[in-house]
Each structure stands twice: as C-alpha cells, then as structure tokens.
Image (cartoon, rainbow, N blue to C red; front, side):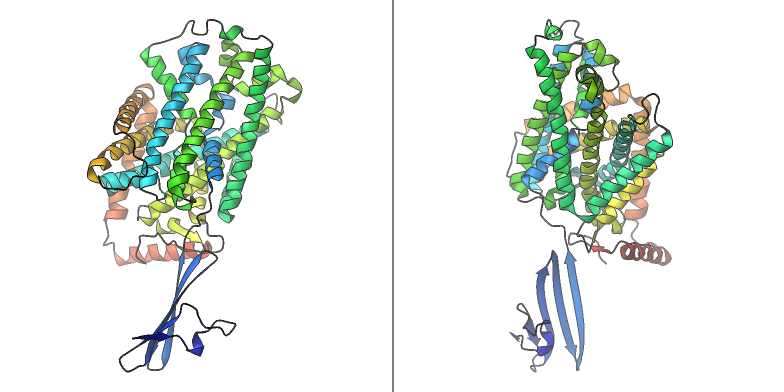
Length: 530
C-alpha cells in the first residue's frame, strides 16, 4: 500500500517536498519506508528511509557513472591524434627500406591505409552492436568466454599500453632536449625525468576533467596536422618548381619479393596503429551507434590521405638515399628547406608524440576500468573519482606501469613486443567476429559487413603474426612468456573464489584504503558484489 509523501521529515533544505518520494505502509497503515531518487551533477542517488517501532534508518545509495560527453569532432581528434605520432615525422623509411623505390613505397602506404580502414570497419560493426567500453576485450570475452578475454586484457595491461606510452614519452623527451644538446645525445637521466613529467602531466589532466583532455587532444591534433600541412605545402612548392626527378621511373629497382612486401606492410601498418582505441570509450560517446563508425571512417580517411601526400612531399625534396640516411626525416626536410626555422621541427614532433600519449592514456584507462568491473583486475581500478567523475585509479595505475617501463634500458627492444601482442589480439578479434555471426545470429547489428571481410582480415593477420615470429623470434618468445604468465594469475586470483578469510580481509582493507586515498567509489557498471 502506498501514499503520497507528506512526511515533514522527508523534505529538502528549502522545506519543499521530495518530488519523487513516496511512503510505503504496512497493513496497519504504519509508515515502514520512504524512497526517493534524484540525479544531480552526474550522480544518481536513491534514498530509502525505513521506520521500525519509531526508529528510522536512512540508507543513501549513490550510483556514479561516466558522462556521455565525447562528440564526433572530439572522437575524430582522439583517433587522428593517436595514429599520427612520431612515425610520419621521424621514420617513414621503414617501407622504403624494404621495397627500395618511391613508387612502390607510395603504393604500400596506400595499401596499409586501406587495410587499416577495413580493420576499423570491422571494429565499427562490433562497437555498434556491442556498445560498451572495453573494445576488443569485450568482443573476445563475449565470443570465446572469460579466459580468452582475460588474456586479451592481460596483453594490453602488461605489454601494449605501458610499453607504448613509455616509448612515446621517451621519444618526446628526446626531441624536446635535442635543441638543448645539439652536439651530443641527451643524458639518460634527463630523458627519463622529462618523460615521467610529461606522462604525469597528461594523466593529471585526464584525472581532473575528460573535457579538458579531449579539448587538449583537439588542440594537439590540429597542431600536428598543421605541421604536416607545412611539410606538404613546401613539398608541393618544390614540385611546382619542377623538382620531380625522384618521381621519374619511380618503380625502378623495386623489390617485389613476398618477404620484403610483407615486412614493409608490417612497418606501414604499425604507423597506422591506434584506430581501434575509440572502441574503449564507447560508454562516453554521444550517440555511439552513429558517431563511432562515422569517427572511424573519417579518421582513417584523413590519416591515409595525409600520410600519402606527406610522403610525396618528402620525396619532392629528399632523394631515397637521403631519406634512408636520416634518423629524423622531418628534421632533415626542414634543414634543407627552411634552415632558419629547423629548430621548430623537433618541438612539433614532441607535440605530436604528446597527442599519442594523451590519447593512449584516455583510451586504455577505460579498457582497464572495464576489465576490473568484470573481476579481471583489482577492484579499485574500476572505481571513479567522486569529485571529477573520471577513472582516476585506472589512470594512476597506467602512470605507475609506464614509469616502470621507462626505467628499462632496452625500452625499444620491448616496443617490438607490441607488434606481436597486437597481432595476436587482431587474430582473436576477427575470429570472434566470425564466430558471433553463428553464435548470436539475432544480435542487432546497426552495421553488418559481408562475412568475407573479417575472414580475409583474419587470414592476413595470421600471416602478419607468423612473419613477426619469423623476423623477431626473441621478442616473440618474450611476448609468449609474458602472455603465458597471465594463465596462473587468472586461476589463482580469479578462479579461486574461496580464498582464506585472512587473505580476503587483507584484500578488502587494501581496497578500502586505496578507495579513501583516491576519493573514489564503484562505478554503475561494476559487476562485483560489495
């Protein structure tokens, strides 16, 4: 039995009645409970007041969730900002080294862009029919179950994310310090200190406000596109002056062997890395069914066109031998064309890399948060800071792992692990997409691609994985070892549910301590029972 709330004890601070309040009566007409629900500043608050023999117990239940505040423009900026990192400025020689000619190099850049676009379309289909943050982790988990999903998460957690951000931050530090140490290599201590500082800065921005982070990403993306436009304009001015010798007989001396083309393809595909990261942020996208596929298509198109035209501009100024001899093509380009302003180029490269770090931190934090919600990572990683409504614990974990990776002397050796790890993840994603067509044929798919596309991409991904093992056996072996180490962790910390009481109490005390320090609480999507 229910009645309208006329209890003066259940009024707000202005004496007004709670709009959504209602009283619950027992058979005798006594008030036994009152409930109210409100939504203020991103919090959903449910208040229950129970009365028993004159005493009242007020239970306040607050649900905290991330806001949907990332627009289409910001989504495009995130993807473009992540993809366009140091590669196009520093070392676009990977393809040229293998295929040997200007014409074949441009063809390979185009092929890599098209292949990345096709992969991104498959991710768009999965993201539209499974609109949940977590990206490939969620897709693999849904298709193949808990353990394969955990291994995907583990690969990202221990290899792809911290190694990638650590390497990018060290590249940032290197190019910022180049003008300070023009005649020698920057000191290792200075490099690591500056790298740690930039990661701390960007993680702090992400912890305080998602809008600040996305707006910052728009600014950085605009800056790096501006830098590329400067290179493109200068290159086409040279072409207008008749500097086209490098394009005469552009396919001469091309290496058409399968091994060279495959390795060149792998180098180019790495340069397009980052197109999948927006799928980690699906919960925060405005109208994800529409904006996710739109952002992916627009971003890949922009990057492919810009990469191709930028390489044409490089070849208008630099000969293939000059490009191969340069450790930083953009710096060499600026020294030959605008020597007075060549000092600006390392700064622009640093800004470009900063965008990649920011985008990686923004995206990967949501992946780890989702993994923790499904009990695959410590529970505090899934929590949201109450004041800023951001996944601060997840971001701080990324910062700690990144700083640890920065301390390794062989950081660029570890980068090779990323290619192996990502190739394994791609194989599982495309296999899962094919399997879901048969496992869940009635799943609503706003975007439905021909089944032949993921089959084709799966075959290519398997070839890339095999070539990676063949070309980089030591890195691949270390990658397999790290991935295999995740198996005992899964069975000990996840499958083993009935842990001894002292162990459970210790875990709870540590979780509560971290929760208090970070001023965080479980998110709305947390699948754990507290």
